[in-house]
Length: 155
Image 1 (cartoon, rainbow, N blue to C red):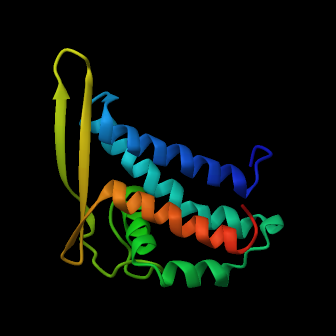
Image 2: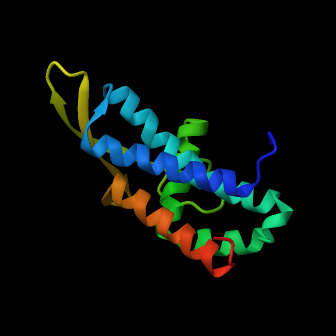
């Protein structure tokens, strides 16, 4: 796509993670823009699997990616949030999911910096009865992918 390879998606994952980090500090815009940024992160990190397996130069096999996703509660949660954002609801036949079809971003704490047009957000997911901080999930997901890519000498 557009002369890019799998590493372009990996770079994009880093930029979307930076966007989520920014939301937790002070970012322009309101809650809708913040939710868009969070969902964009989950879609981007989840679709790294497709970029890796569709780019033959990566040398990554579909089975290797499935092993990573199937063994990671964090990446399964990312898959649920990405697929829910893309398809409106979760499909019980999809791989790499938590099994909780009500997985969602359930809570949002916001601080509004009056008169500045900026706010700070903290989101939590709800899945399997365990709430998790969105930034914590995002950081952990990137670290899992980083370990996977490093083990294959791709980064």
